[in-house]
Amino acid sequence: MVTYDGWKASGLLDGIAGGKVTLGTVPGAKYEGITALPGDILGIVLGLIFILVAFVLPNSLVGEDAVEMPAE
Image (cartoon, rainbow, N blue to C red; front, side, top):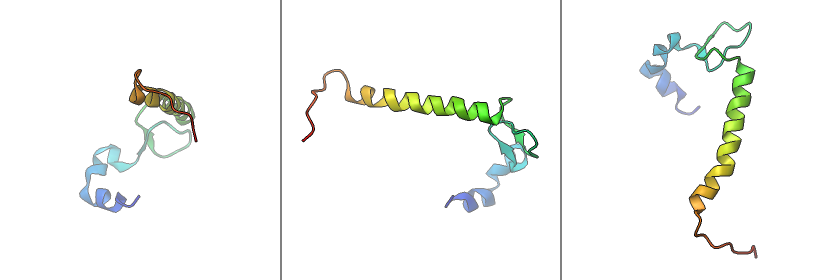
């Protein structure tokens, strides 16, 4: 949000459908969606992907050779 004014002034946001789009389609909205998926379904799918990443990422960063230490 802090950098929005800079991005808006650069004109880079205007290249995507005039700068007025959403990621998923929203019924009754005046903005177009980049994807054909409804916004609520897209939100659920993205949420599930983020949850999956939250479970997989720590295990991949630690690796198999890590030694578990008890909490103090």
